[in-house]
Length: 570
Image: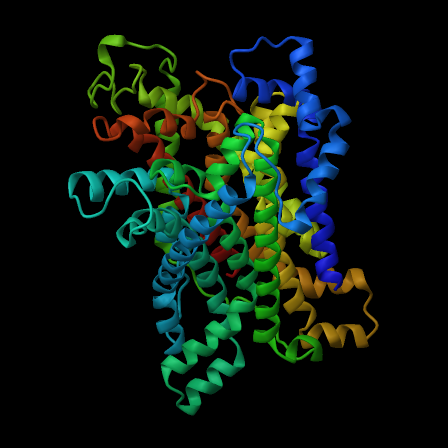
């Protein structure tokens, strides 16, 4: 009951915030309705007053919010300000589409996560896990922008090869491409987190005893998954919600009438009844997914969760391959060389005669759709993209640790259910568009996965026998936290935060593309992707440059993390 009460309170607070959006953004809903329904009427005070009286807006935002909430028990989600039609049928239809797409994408994500961890499971079950793996492949896949992957799949598999339809929704073959575009980055992230936890699982005494007893390797691997999954189930719950409400770009590219696209269109049009309904459904889905993950984690842990019999997951001191550190140095040097070379060029000079020019001596990485040098824009956009993403990543790590330690599950699930685009619209409406507003918007929602990861790891560490012994010996709360709990929580959460830096950079760039972040023509890697994506088939170099830079950023983050981890274990 306490669990549901907290989630319900957070849900009501967010819905109320959406209801107050016109006042916060200093816009007049009557103007929105006038432009949508009566474009031929002049916006005179008499006309606006008549619209307010007709729609009930003359009672103020609290009256409108109360009237909308009073219809919820009857299943009435209100009427659209734009179309004047009931909201319920369109929003529930969009939810059904998004849930179907989410299920297909989640299946792809789970299969990919298992494929990425199959090698670790096999080696660990046979006691051959002698070196750490950097997980570079998973990091690159996790750093791939969903809309870029969707565009590549549509161009190659749909347009050029004709294997799948490029647009539409309903037939079974229309599920494949959008499910791959959304499932691959999510599966790479889950696989990387699982692969990071498995070495500690195989280092536990039960694994050595099982091998000595002659237990089949498949059973040992299955037990290892059972042991590692409780800390990852909350992430899976967050992925479920993210795949449902955060698929805006993929839905737009494949013309899929889903909930994410519906929410974005309503937010841009200031159609608050539709936006409130979309957010309400996303939050309810977040509550359901969070509850399912919570119950699943408790079921997997069993009585050990409350009996103080759950040993902590301590990563073994495995040597890091020298190629990992060397790879980090080479990749870092290559990125620095590209950036420094680009800084010597003008990123704003547009040569109309050289639009979409291929790579040449004058333009080593080609030019974009306006004739601007891609190398120059990569170099000048590096500081804005990377440094901002690192700063936001550090803030989200701190917020995630604090929220996870405070067990703010309701707030975590609520923040995860809100797409960054929606947060960006709210922040931009209040403070105006700009780079700082985009950074704040991303930070407001990006901490949720780290908080869920922290909370799950803390629950396991508190159930460890050594914590019980420390408590019996009179250790205080701060000593137990600093010496017995945080050492098992901080390293995996920090590595998780590092893995999310490229995704943060992309979220910032997507807000910039919508006019909510850094304004044009400032160079930014994500903006470069969005601006040149329509020309990907004709001039792939204009897209490959920033895409390769984001993927290299993800690989460099994981290689550096693995190298530092290996040095710490020596």
